[in-house]
Length: 137
Image (cartoon, rainbow, N blue to C red):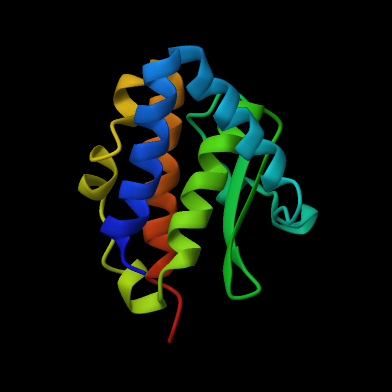
């Protein structure tokens, strides 16, 4: 799996849902948010250094047990967190370390999310990229 394949998968889902109704994208994100709670970031890791600070609600992400995990109190934020965790975790470590912000502009979340959610989305990507720099092969 590579980053472009995974991003295309999410973009196609988003485009299909947008064609039906823009609210469907939010419903889908909320359903992804429910999945995030199946294997959330541990309570011990829900600390300030792992917090997405620009998110209106609590949203945390960290590299735990050899992969990314996240947790949020808000379902939409949890939805995009699930999506990001899934994308990063579906790639090999070397491939994941090549990810940059530009990759995510392809799925056009900018057009879907409110300003504060969009800011949180991109901050979470930056946090994840930063954490990968400290992960050894």
